[in-house]
Length: 110
Image (cartoon, rainbow, N blue to C red; front, side):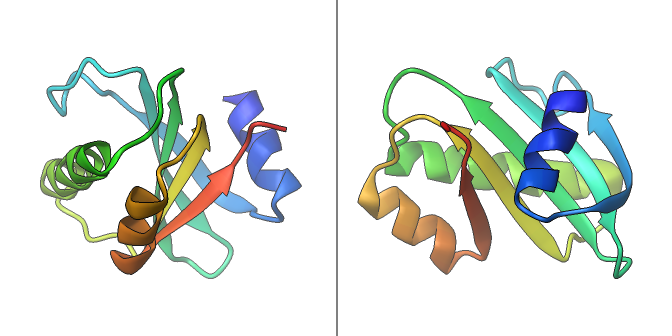
């Protein structure tokens, strides 16, 4: 949790509340950390932290969007912002698709 907060602070993102979401409740076994946060403007933000060795492809983007829809149903809440913190190579088509769907992408490979 501390690592996520430090990553977000490095990108000038401060949250009043930040708590993890159980990925088992969403029915996934992926190596992904999911957080729900409230920023200083009282906007709810869904944060996905994904670390993998293989390239993030378009099919992964579709799977992530489905996971986000499950999260909205589980929490019974619509999120103002969607944030993906990734630590892997990202396919250009997947990146364009994610931005088109309203995701903010942050590369944390530094």
